[in-house]
Length: 399
Image (cartoon, rainbow, N blue to C red; front, top):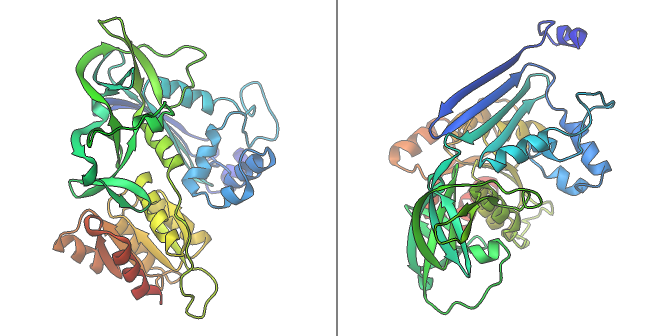
């Protein structure tokens, strides 16, 4: 309200900015305001009261995950409903329709600062280039812009890492899962030692999907799914092929989210307490869900309590809420990268005592030197990362 805006040092009238621009193969629609921001405390209270999420799960959520609660249908922070707002509908409809167009909806908000909503949709919605693959008796299509590579590998080249089956591509550990398993399709024993993989990418996340065979690339018209199939997880549309067969198009962000939600959690083992019963807290800061999940699995198996942040800014906000015993941060991240976060921590009177380990695919001598210059206590390479190296680095800092 105008009175509250003046008290907060803002102009009496609020400002809403609407922008649209092209970013690569996508159109971005951006809506920003300088209002009160999303009240995460009210969101937490509402989801708990409605029985949507348990109090324990909410307590572990990062700031970004709390903000994303606004996409839950029927959830609102308004005490009273009007004809245009407060009914708890709207944002879930926005996300559902944007994702039906193979797009994404994101929201960022800070209390007292304002809110930014970004909608990202493909530039070409009519004709798309896809890779057709066969899984069992079904054909699935991947949009080529979501593909990183295709691979043919032998099972003996797979390895186990942080509770997942992975293989190494371009010095990165890439998790592997059967597309049949991910989509809950019937699975049969595959005795062929050679496997075909489709490696898909979303932002910084890579995921390798086992398929039965490659059919080939096509330029196709993708039809949106109508009711009641519009909400089928990870499926964004359908393609009618020249043979008369139907291929379902896969939504890669949905696949990665589905994998992340079903990924195994580390089995906690007790560390030798060294005279302390309370478990050490480690804050993991990484914009890749898969890397956050791998780090969580490794650290929980070592007996640490793990908190997670989606980027440097989120990590800094979490530091203000709960000071960890150690920060493990990525290098390249949006909003605030690992170097900037480290420097901010080391220049703070409250947090400069907290050890910071940077772990990144950027691991040249120059990269490491920049990390140590801003105050990092250690610098590890993701390409050489294993549980022993990680645990030894942590033990050097917090015991």
